[in-house]
Image (cartoon, rainbow, N blue to C red; front, side, top):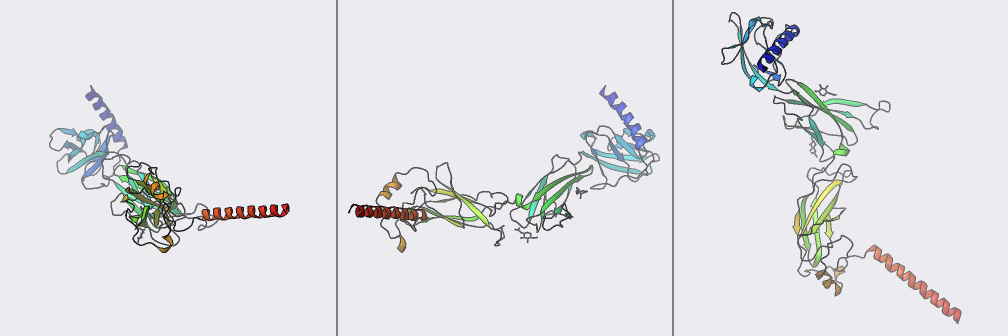
Length: 391
Ligand SMILES: *[C@@H]1O[C@H](CO)[C@@H](O)[C@H](O)[C@H]1NC(C)=O
Ligand SMILES: *[C@@H]1O[C@H](CO)[C@@H](O)[C@H](O)[C@H]1NC(C)=O
């Protein structure tokens, strides 16, 4: 039953195809010669190579003597397969009536291109790259054409032509054939329209994506993170790191950082935002190993934070002070050792003072001292005035 239906529809399509069929030569093959392509589930037309359009031919499957379509089908040098499925893939032979000319075609089936999925990323402010993947497997040889246009920053463009854009320029695929292309020398304030067009023998499909460097900027994580103890300071750790190698150092484009740390087995991170390339943690838990990590972001908050650097472990110093700087030679207060012992509380940055001698006085503390001095002198004056009055 399904056979007779299929046969009937084949005949109908053959008639329709005969009406539409033009007398052009075989379309230029895409990809390797001798291969023709069709869409799974749709009608597929094969063209007998080397035979003029309109010349009747017979069609055979390779290795099968049964004729698929006779020369009287009225289709000239073409073969029509209705509702092609994967069993129709393979080699076909076509032959003119006199047998003088014979052609061979390899049929491959798949799907037309679908709009690719594109995303762009920038690890620094000079170049950015876009990567893509197909949104539907076509099963056919596929190429991607990648280009971009630039929409100039308002101040750079002529005041009249608000939407002035330039290009398109190719976005070179690096390395060739990779699913990635790079826009070199991008401008920080410009907008770019990326065109990634997926092309296969059955057609083309374009994805356009608008990007600006400011939005996609995501630095690589800082590098070279080191965590060192500070001799004589059982609650200090000094962390230092460097800029990621991919970030060109220029005075106008700086990175800022954030640093996280926690003692072993403690689930919650403490965080500080260091201004430079080093930070002294002052509330580490004495005697415990700590893990530290750091991430980076554009100094003016463009884009997003980098991924975290690999974690590095460090344990505060337990040994005595080897060499005491002059300003640190203040006597230890007895309370502090006990404080270190019975403080299982999680570290809170900048809340608990370092129990070690101060390197420098907290400005807030200085203000407090000045204020209390002021109050005292006021009270003294008042008392003096009172005594004078009484007298
Ligand atoms: C940007 O691309 C240029 C080549 O055009 C290259 O010399 C430079 O190193 C790249 N910059 C970064 C940060 O990768
Ligand atoms: C995108 O690129 C394709 C291939 O280069 C091109 O044919 C198409 O016109 C482009 N589309 C736009 C909107 O620029």
